Amino acid sequence: MVQSPLYIGCSTDLKDCTANYELSNVTRISKLLGLTVTAMEYCRYDPVLAVKPVLRVWDNNHLPVAERMISAFASSLVALDGFNATEAGGKPSNVGASMLSAIKQSVFYYERFHANNVREAKKAFQDRIDYLEKVSKLDPDQRRLIDRAVALEEEFESSIRGHRVRTASERIAEVAELQRRLNANEARVDAFKKKVDLAEGHLRNVRPIIDFLIKKGLLSDAADDLQSASANDSMIIQCTDHTIICRTDSPS
View 1 (cartoon, rainbow, N blue to C red):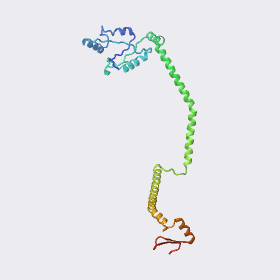
View 2 (view 1 turned 135 degrees about the horizontal axis):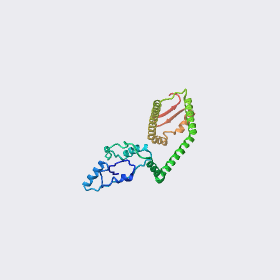
View 3 (view 1 turned 180 degrees about the horizontal axis):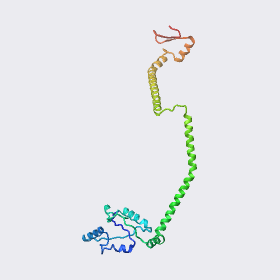
View 4 (view 1 turned 120 degrees about the horizontal axis):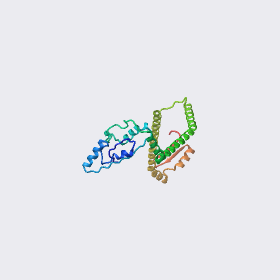
């Protein structure tokens, strides 16, 4: 938003005060504002002064505060790039009681914004009251929750009383030891599997020779050998004309 510098003042007669800010005569307004308007006219600009009432006050004690507040909102002091050369609210109020009464009547009875503000404020207060009532109803539930939390804490403390509670570092070390044992067992299983695979490979290599010897009658079947061994406690297998294989339970 682009905004021109502002000038804030307090007046008991808005009609006469507004007439002073006509461009035809700048001697009765703020000197800085009059100088700015004159310089703009010299530069062939067409300045326009807009005079608007911002706040109406019906209490003498509120006038200095209101002037300071509006000046702060508008940043109208010279130090803030405004046209107010003196501090706002410094002059004592001399507004008569009749004028204040007329302003109060205008605000309370003839202007719609005050009634709207009262209506909105009433709704806001009612919402606040409803909220406080809901909070008051939650107090018993909150007390029950607190009592339950205290009971759970006492139950937990009694359950662990007499037992050593391990720290997180100790539990991590325990898990690491279990993992180490698991890895060692897996390594032993892998080594055993390799031995089994090696034995199965040797068996596959010699199986054709065994089958050939059995087919030629030079080697009996394993089932017959076992049956003969169990009956005679010894077994003689003739492999060639000059070689025999003798099995016996006693040393030979």
